[in-house]
Image (cartoon, rainbow, N blue to C red; front, top):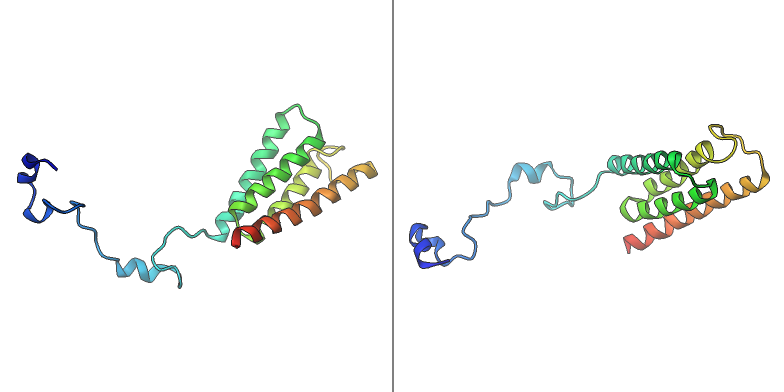
Length: 147
């Protein structure tokens, strides 16, 4: 602070590093927080995690509907999405992401499209392998995040 501006401030703020008084913890806010939160408002709710999973899978599916890629490529894109989501969300929403992405991939991209039937045994193996890898990958990523 310069001496000119210091003259216009109250005397106790002249040498203070922060010119604004910080209010103490508000008891009403602390009482409304879940136990163990200690005033930190950054915790995520499980419902928000599930909505984030649905939004991400919906975005990938919608983008994939208009992209000129084969259905095998979308298996990798969905797998990447599940692993990325498991870095952000809890363990159960990550499992939910693996299940929803496998169902969406089967219904929208695997031939015959817009059907849950699978015509070729190769595609059954592809979907089964995808599902198992998505489950394992999401669980390992969630375990790494908690450590």
